[in-house]
Image 1: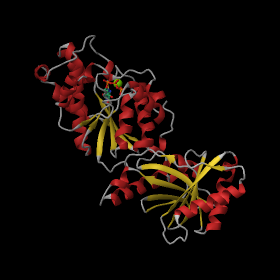
Image 2: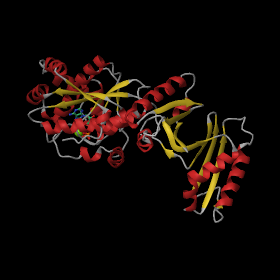
Image 3: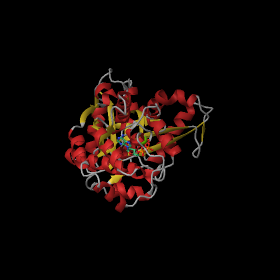
Image 4: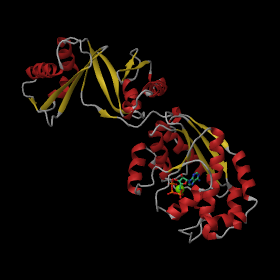
Length: 399
Ligand code: ATP
Ligand code: MG
């Protein structure tokens, strides 16, 4: 029996004339993601994606696992394919799902006839296939509202597809179809989740991380590499820029009012990120900030950070509670790495009483008293190290 994976479009299906571009982008991503799972034919017809093994060596379990994590698909299913012939459909449904039906009490058949040349209409197909399965499983009952199991049959161009309930996909839009942005990646819980959320909206990403050796360690840096790798299952392969931030940070520590240290440092990071973003063709910055989570995330502090450079700053977690963020971090597999206890440069030199409501005027005044800072920032940006984060290495251990 031939088995394939079917992917169902989510929001993409609402796109008008440029839907083709979204479909081509998704096909390319699927092919790339399945490269090491064996040989598959991937195509799209009538808004549905098909992933068909081309030989026995193709690993369908691995492929299904991968496809579930690709943004752009609202649902996926593994399906048996047979001829568009009623008897063949009955036999396939029995051999593919018969065992499952033995283990449940109620079921329902759903049918969809995309190929209108098939002689039975959908209601007739549902009725007849239901009767056929009932005759083979006499203790089974039909329940159209809350069935224990659904048998779905879809009559499409290339054949009849028979499968059980669909599995939810990741939803969202194919990565890259919304442009490219630079994600500010710390070692914490929030910023990997922010990357995940924006990639889900179709942004291709690079990451930037600020390290301040010797105050921050090599292990802290390796942890960030591990987080970028883990996230790559969703974002795809990307660059991670590691900026040596010690000198600008010391300059701020030594020359600015301690109460303003954090907001000044965040503005400085934004300026450097803005410079690297422009060089890389990134059109926005992303942070894991969440309103009022810490002193630098009040509305007033955010106003000051936003004014530091020109690119839009996307903050997908702004309205999320920490518990909600943690839930996502667990689901996408970054939480356990994020909670490893290594220092971040954002948490060194922090004053005991950071100002909760800084004004732009006082911040600009403090910056005017540090005329050497822009040169140090330019030096740091120029010395940024570019690491290639490869999706193939997503599972590598972080040490
Ligand atoms: P996280 O869990 O992401 O570390 P947080 O609650 O600890 O977030 P902050 O330390 O204030 O918050 O940082 C807010 C955001 O600033 C982070 O989500 C991240 O986007 C960015 N950021 C913080 N530290 C760094 C860093 N060292 N390098 C790059 N970006 C950083
Ligand atoms: Mg942090």
